[in-house]
Length: 209
Ligand code: ADP
Image (cartoon, rainbow, N blue to C red; front, top):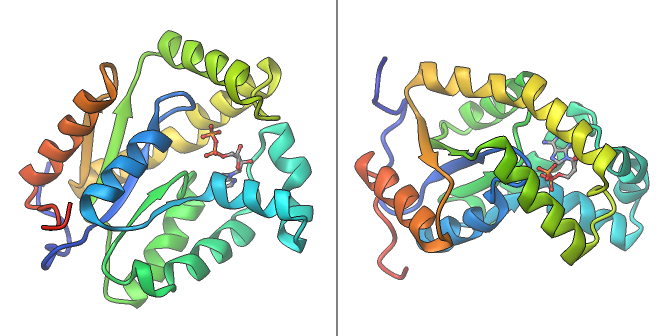
C-alpha cells in the first residue's frame, strides 16, 4: 500500500473528504475540521435541504428523492458540487461531506479536480459501530425532526451506504489517501484524532485556526 498523496499539498489549505455511515457524526466533525483548516465545509445533504426549503427548481427536483432516502441522480449532484467548488472560497481547499457517495461520483469528482490540476489530499473515514450510529440517529430524529429520519428511511439510507458508498473507500485506500479514524469518543477527542492523522500526512492547519 502506498502512503503518499498524488499531489503533495502546497501551503495551507487542504482538499478533504469525510466519509462515514449515517449517524457517524461526519457532519459535525466535518465543520470542526474545516474550521481548523480554514476551508469551507461543503455538505451536499445541507445544500439539497436548503434547496428544498427555498422551493427552488433544484429543490423541487430533489424533494421526493430525499424524503425516500434515495440518491439524487449523479449528473445533477455532480453539477451542483462542481458549481460550489468553482466558488472563490474553495480555491485553496475544501472539505466535502456526503459527496462522492458512489463510484460514479468518484469518477465525476476525479475528472473535475484533475481538470484543475488538483486531487484530494486525504479521505477521512469515521468508523462507528452500527449500534452506536443507529442510537445517534434515533436521538437526532427526536431532537431535529428531519423528515428523512424515520425508521424505514434510515434503513434505506444505511443500505445504500453499505452498497454504494462503502466501496468508494476501497478506491481511496488503493490511492493511499484514506485515513481510518475511530469515531467513538467525545467530540473533541475525535476532532483531535482526525487532525493528528491529517498532520501525520503533512497537512498542517492554517495559522489562523
Ligand atoms: P445522511 O448521510 O444522514 O443520509 P445527508 O445529509 O448527507 O444525510 O444527505 C441527505 C440526503 O441528500 C440523502 O439521503 C440523499 O437523498 C441526498 N444526497 C446527499 N448527498 C448526495 C450525493 N452525493 N448523491 C446523491 N444524493 C445525495
